[in-house]
Amino acid sequence: MRERSQCLLEIDEISFTLNDLNLYLDTHPEDQEALSAFNQASTKRKQLMEAFAKEFDPLTINCITPEINQQKFSWTAGPLPWDNQIKGGAL
Image (tube, rainbow, N blue to C red):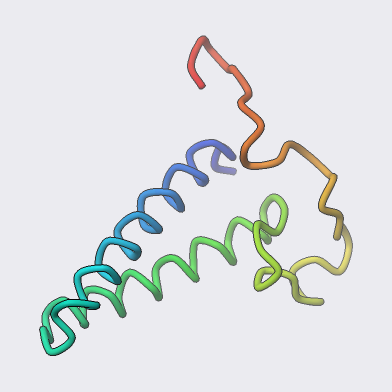
């Protein structure tokens, strides 16, 4: 089982990439390479979000499905993503 904080870091990184590509595509809508990178990042983010929901808890309303959260649906189960938990001296 992967650590929750590592999973959240991966989601943060791909979300930043996706947002950055989105801003770029606002001004360069015909850049096919950027569009391809955006689509790949979007797919990767969706996969990471679904994996996080299965292993831990849903992060967004889009992550709530009967298959994933049938046994443990709760927004209050476990720490929330913005709760800074110190483990080993690091945030």
